[in-house]
Structure formats: C-alpha cells, structure tokens
Image: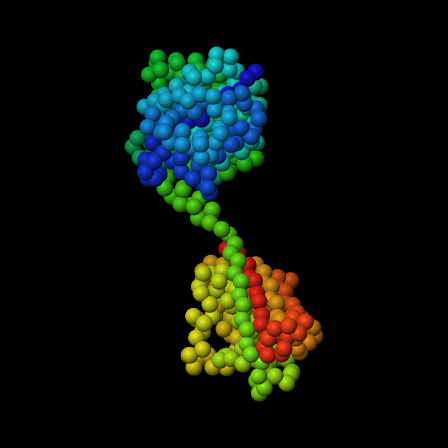
Length: 385
C-alpha cells in the first residue's frame, strides 16, 4: 500500500509578523519547510509528497529548492485555498489515484520526528487513521455562553498535532462530503470523526518537541536557543624578570632570586587567564579594565582581579567549563608548585580542580624566556551559557 504526504505550507503566517510566510523562515540555519521535508524523506516510507503553497510563494519555493534542496520526495505542488481545509483538499486531489495512505502535516511543525511519523503510518495501515497526540498538562476550563466555567477532567484530554494519517480514499471522501454539507472544521481528524467511527490517537517519543510555530515569540525562543551555548577565549601575557620583586604565579608565591616586574603583582599566568575570559566575553583585555595608569591597581593581587572578571562572566550569564594555562619559563623549576596553582585557579574560577589544567614548559634556552629575561603565559578558557 503506497504512502504519500501532503505538506500544508499555504498559510500567510500573519501572527508571526515576519513579513513573509513563516515556513520559509530559517530555524537554526534551515527553513521550517526544508526541515519538514528532511524528516519525511529520511523516514524512507513514502512514495512521494505534495506541497500545498500559495501562488505568491511559488517563487520563494523555487529559490528554496535551489538553496536548500533538492527535495527529491516532492512530486507535485498544489495551490492553497482560502482556508486550511480547502488547502488540504487541494493537496489530496493532487495525489495519484492509487495512493493508499496519506499523512497530512503542517509545515509550521518543523521538528517532527521519524518516530512520530512512523507511529501515525502504522496506525493508519491497521485502523484507517493515526493522529499524533500528547497528554494535556494544563488544567482546561470550558466557558459557556453565559460565562459559566466548567473544569474538564485533564486525564481524559489529549492535544492533537500533525501528522494526521489516514486511509487516502476515506479522508478524501470526508473532505468532499464536508464541501457538499458546508461543514467547516479546524483539522482533518474532526472530518474523519464526523463521517466515520472516530479516529485513532497515537503517541510516540518526541511528540512533545513537535511544536507548531505560530507567533513571533515562538521564533524568538528558537533564535535564543540557536545561539552558541559555548564560547572560547585565548589569552597571552609576558613580564620581565627583575631583582627585588616577588615571583607570583597562579596566586602562589615561589621563592626565587627574581620576580616579575609590573604595575600589579605581575602574575603573568593569571593575567593570561583573565585575558582569555575577557576574550570569550568579547570584553577586550585586562589593560582596558585594569589600566597600569590607575594607582588603584598598584601592587594589586591578581587573584582579586580575577574575581572581578569572574563577576563579569556570571553577570553575562556564563560559567567556566574548563581552563588550560601554560607557563613558559626556563627557570625556576615549577613542578613542585603545580598542584597548588591548579587548586588556586579552580577556586578563582568556581570550578572543580579537574576542570583546570596548569602546566609549565621551557624553551630549551631559546628566546627571552630561555635567556632568563622574562616569563610568558598562555591560557584558553571555555565558557558555557
């Protein structure tokens, strides 16, 4: 028994306020209509599909077929009617006479899963109909003509979606009878219920995600979801080694004959880490936030400055995923201080120690680090929304 799909995409989408048919609007880089067609084609259970479009959207679809296609499943395009019911009827009339099962789906539901599609197909093959549904989670009130309110039993209620899948000839006959009777409905299941002995409701994994995009707010939520959930920043700093200064790295004071010169405590490793965090935030560098011309930062503890940067991270809605710091120094040997450095940085970032790595390397006596003139540090930080 052959199976076909009718993808209804002829709505104007005025409530979405997008300035064009919402099914052509990109959802995380791919249009809602293309996502629907992807799902039905990936299912591998259909002989073809008919798309129902408004005449005014024909050119937009042709452009979409070039930019996001080819849509190999699409065999025919039908013109939309004045109502959804009329559009579906036009789509059904465009199917071949030998079609056995038809799945009717709204292109405004771009997240339909293969599990959902296949559940309705199997039900329609066995019972003549298969309508995807989900339990109602809100309490539903029925308001009478006089304003009286009646609470409905939530356990017995279901919210229906598309696809709604039927025996092709039965649903076509139901549409034709409705046209003759002047019967207007909001979905195809209502027609099937009216002319036959009810419909078969089915459930499937992923039905809760099969949302319908209706208003501008729906698209704004998706736009927020599609923003990257992680950001990466990298930092670099260098300070000269001089006599008469403390050597502080990752907040740990290391006994040695020289220290790092700078306006603050010159903790080169923490400075590189702060630059990485600020880079991930798009907030410039430490010179912008803690200028060496400001006496307030004279001799400042860099771990305290790190706390200021971390507050910026939190206020912006991020947290640290992990951080990696590399200290480049020929001398002194730092191996004995690595654990303390790691603990300090983890504490400063508000993460577990396993989310931090601190390592040291030499330059085989090459460059200013190898000559003992200074110490540099590099850092990479991952922020998670």
